Length: 329
Image 1: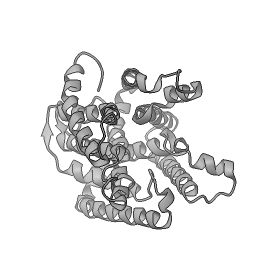
Image 2: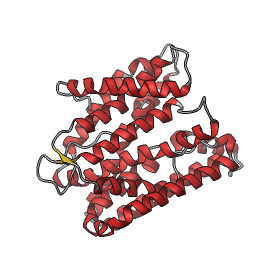
Image 3: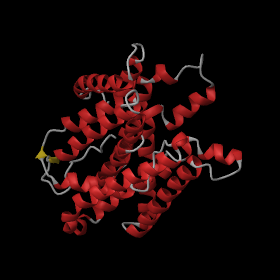
Image 4: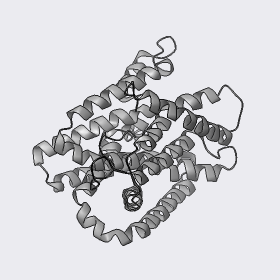
């Protein structure tokens, strides 16, 4: 969920950024904590499922989409400094979480190697962002600014990830080995089938922004339609496959996430301070350590979620200050 180090408003004067998108990041970071903390799981199973396996699933695709929107500007200026910065960021946070994953005394070496390659827990997002951005760059080298190949690749990879998710969750392939692979989270939640499509959607929005902006009156109605579609899709999955209702990719996200992004971006709140965006990034990156420590105290999942959010939000400003010395955000 780390944003490229560029202005948050493509059409804004130098130094200005759209703070409404930074505030959206804060909300999305809170959703991720709710997802990982099991919000309402100790209160009502159906409500918990709707939030953690439905509504909160908009967070990560939206982060990819926001980064894709700004990535388009980076590609025009040269993206290699951003790649180096992101690799350093990934390395630093993998070290910070080292006590959780780098444990050869209790974990198989293949699990440690896997985490090092694709990221520990939520840090998969960082390495997926890097790999997805590199794929966008490869397509740009091959096809230039032609958007057709990018849109086609994004649609195909999204459809592939969605198909893997549904085929696995509903056990539609009788072969046990194939079914096991389809139900492995890494088979669909990765840079290719998850990160790249939404990153590409953001790039395409940036490219066609003048045309898309003419339809601004439809942003909010389409966002509401997308939310209704997500609720319906979650409800059908929960009803017909309650024992395996965990979904990360929904068809409705292809409508809801872009429309939510456009709706919020249209509410321009301009400013020069990057602290809100960095604050959101800090919440996302530190929250898994915070939630881990809460397990030493007996409490319900809802209380754990709220405490995790409060403590993460309290620690995030410290990370913003430390970021002046180390590239932590």
